[in-house]
Image (cartoon, one colour):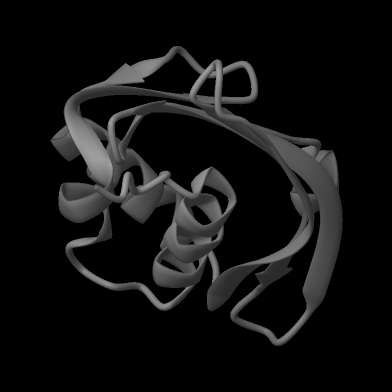
Length: 125
């Protein structure tokens, strides 16, 4: 009998690819229903639907928002992934700000149950 090992790095990379492609059901497919999202110093956002609304509202401020993954560090024992990334924020006037940051994803099975993002957004103001 062959046992399949879950690939946390691939799951994190796929999540960001789908997020950047604005796939409408990315949160429904990738997050647990009771997932919790934390972004910088905002209050944590509990629940998959509330996370989708929060992220959608944030992304609506920009013409586009994409993530370049620099490094993924997976810990299968902790069912967690750390992602070093550069976020490109394109404004409606065409200006682009690239900001380094990181995120941490906690998994429950093959879905994300905790999603934390830390990016210094001070240059976006």
